[in-house]
Image (cartoon, rainbow over all chains, first blue to last red; front, side, top):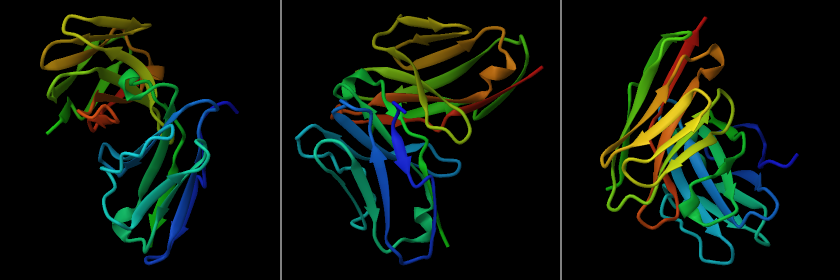
Length: 115
Length: 110
């Protein structure tokens, strides 16, 4: 499809394990975002990539969270030593312009459950 | 600190019963206010961008308006397919991300 693709769609893991979530943005989109959505909470910004610029990591909640974007396309969000409070839906979005347009295209998310 | 507050948290309407959703914001220098729709199990879908007070945008039964402190999403004669969570967001000061409110969940019954 032509939309933002995320995998896995569901992930159940045990506390303390590491997880990797993948995002494949729309082809040609230079901006890529990761958000987290917990039950009853709004979308929480995690990290922003724009082209070859240094990413804005200001939203990452702890040093257990990291993300990379290879070749300006696919991105991977890694959570080390997962905790129960990490359980949430992790949403990826991409945009063809810098953030000021506000029109982000979201994937369907990866639902993470930490037991 | 940039902040977005939406009300009500939930709204139940009968088909054809018009109403409005509210989004109030606190941001230093508004650089855009954005409305999204989110269906269960899906990612948010972009609806509108508003940049300055007095601006209005329309799409089918939805109309978004903007003042200096808040935005309204007016829903005229809603249908069951309008049922969804509506999210409001502003651009952060760095211009790198959208700051979202918690949303209003709208249910329209026939």
